Length: 347
Image (tube, rainbow, N blue to C red; front, side, top):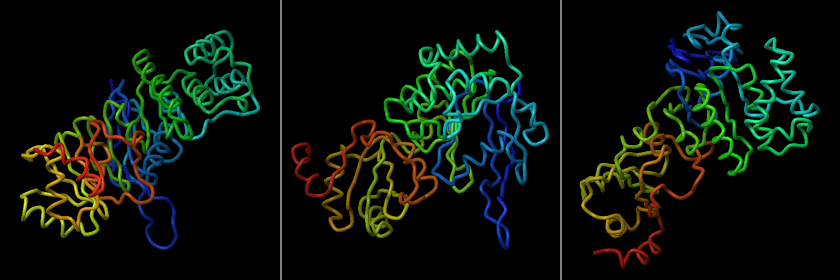
């Protein structure tokens, strides 16, 4: 069976003014096998939506090729569209119509009708807990219910590949979790391939594999846990107003190799550090009292991977963690507060 998605050397430039416009995608390649849940992780402007527009046959790439189940998205658009379901950032529903009317209208685009359409519609509404809402107008639904109705719309035909572009935008945490539970059930029950564009790390963590995008390029790709392990079992993050000077002193005085990330941060893989976490942080604050603004020892996150691979700033549009607490309850504090709390834990 061909790959569900195969992108080879895709570069795309939008029309610009004088001179060559910057590329939204640059020599981008990707392969997604059937049945996989794959995430494209990156901030706004990293190229995720451009790639989705190419795969959805909305525009051809400037260079390279994109195929869906072996069919070229540029030269075989009709065949590709029959393989796709698409859930956009905003629900593609007519608010003046009922839930059932929206699905019937969508089914007509795929030549569906009669008892077969009604059976499929009824099955999907039951699967997503919308049976008692089928006659409700969409404008009366909550954000979470609209998302579920939009997912039912995208699955109506039914497609072997589902493209989801920031699908939980505007949802509260409970609705986001429920939506992802539906996707997990969908993948397991129907073997649907999921390709999800997101800037939320906790959503990417749910995927089988993730590709990290930055300035239109793929900077990392793999299983989330494997990408995080590449940074070590523990990582030390230091915030400093003089990160380059601090990096040199860490190497000279403590033998720690630090990597600059963004404007003010350093990452240090500290698996081999002899101290436990409180003692290590106390040593650092004592050794560099004027250069360390804050320090954290924790398990690496996908944001750590992104920053380490790109050196991107955390300012402006950036990846977001759905949970401000680290996975292992990592330690972070300002100098005085940390010294006070860690004194009793230091051997």
